[in-house]
Image 1 (cartoon, rainbow, N blue to C red):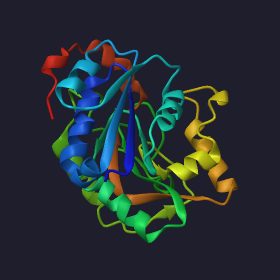
Image 2: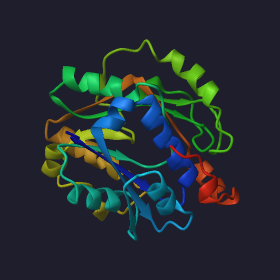
Image 3: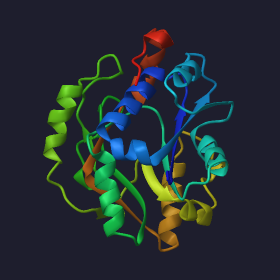
Image 4: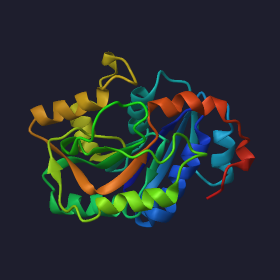
Length: 245
């Protein structure tokens, strides 16, 4: 029985979506087999729906204000007891979800789990801040430049990190329970939408209610930073050319 709703928002980011789903299917097969994958194509004109249909991925075309409104909508039309909230521009390391699920079993009093974010460092001018679990390692500013081999080398510096780190900045993708999502009333879109920190507000409200959140430091993922978003429209592609699963 599949008990996880894996919710993904995408907007004309098909090459990123395909790469992320590849790392979900082949780097994290137990999650792939356990979750129902839901892709929400928000005003997409790049063939996202056609590609998903070809590859057997559930996909719904939506026209909504942005990330958090889509997440709220997706949560309402799914019913699995666990929910993963995600966008499409991530690369998941091998066993990313295995490490998180293992800590969920060991820390059942926590409600919100994510991993260590490795960023391209292009749009964030800051030094490494270990307490935030956010590391600048430029492995490529867009999908066509990404160095997967270098990514596998970089994550070795984190693979010996064990356990969890509580009460820190949270990242997407993350997993929580549907009960927790409903308890908090979802994401507060009254604050606006992406790029506002509504997910941080979600975490803050949980903490104020005594519901703990954490990062699993040994679980790594790569995020194409904000500046890479500005370059996505300059790289042309046809959906039929994008790798299949």
